[in-house]
Image (cartoon, rainbow, N blue to C red; front, side, top):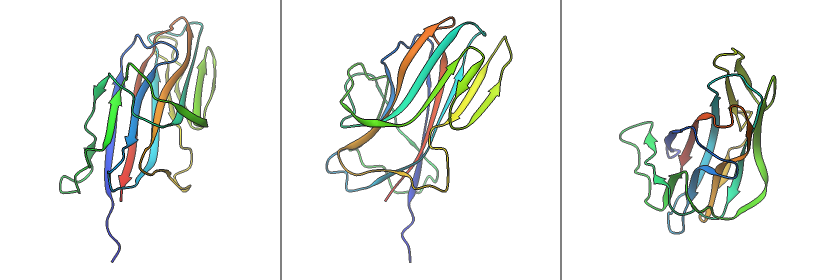
Length: 178
């Protein structure tokens, strides 16, 4: 019999006021957790207050730590009777001090006036309320991003300029532990 994996969701809203270079959310599998974290999906929903001249880039990157400061977040289990998440697996939103990023980005989403590049969907181009949804892991059939102990991922605001320069961003991360 195959052991069932516990599945968890992180769903955070990053309010307006995010500047370039900020870490939006970090998921980290700390030393001694005794689990492997498999990241199945990372979705970024970007919503601007109005359609102006702007450019925003968000990247999904590997990290060597969780960073300090910010707000701790408790992932939501898909099944209330699932295995508990070890305390060494941590999630922090908007850490004030970032840990080291390594390697090239796993994925990135760039939005600018009248143009977008990403791996998924452009939802609405309404001039009063443009909304963009990106799946930063584009293919559900591909292998997940596996985080062994002392490995993590971070969704980072890399560039954010123009009008409106301060988007409202919702980030959803789905992961399993085994």
